Length: 262
Image (cartoon, rainbow, N blue to C red; front, side, top):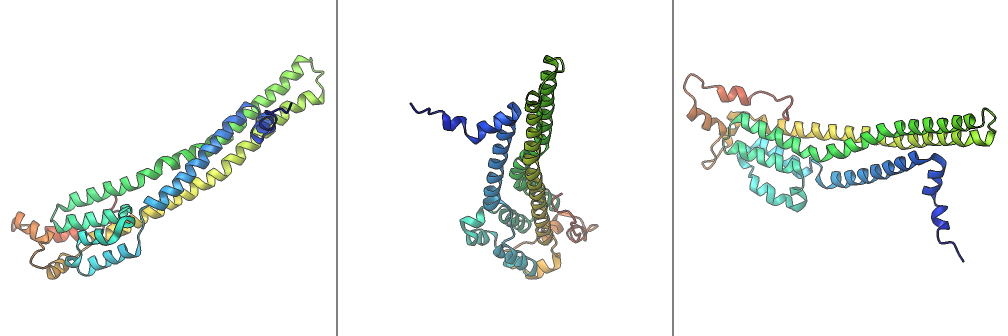
């Protein structure tokens, strides 16, 4: 009768466990979790990562040239479903709409910084998982090394120093196998973590530069380009401030925000 368990017993996972002991099981599980996390992160980045598309870049340029000509509702409608999945698209349109509605300048910056941080939060947990796997894999390999050497010396002690080479080689082989497996798992995930962190830094820089372009608008240009249905933030603040502070808005809005997202 054919042994149905033979393919399973001779499988690669079983062979790895036989080679490296129970520590190898943990390393295999970590490798699978890391691979699934990386695939999830790539899909998440392809669909929901903040990106400066050509249409959005044109919107920012139009906003800098003629603020009154930009209508956030029209921008959202023209972006379509794919554009609405872009967090940077929502961030830019919401910021422009807040400026046109005459909201407080500090509140606009704080809201933009909070929304920018929220747009990057979905990528932080997967990155942390990959970093933890890259840090734990060598330690687990070292643990396997220690366990393997303990087994080798235990065999030697049991025979009162008369252990043969076969008895000693089993523990040493297990020790070397787990060390190599830990490094094999750790090295690629360490490289992936560094690459993902670099990508997140570039995305953060893109968000920051885009917000600077949106927030850094000279009030006089806004007033000249405004139509009768548009009331600029400068007009809103002029009606609320006294005659002793005529340049308050110009001073605040005229600053270049080196870190617009906080």
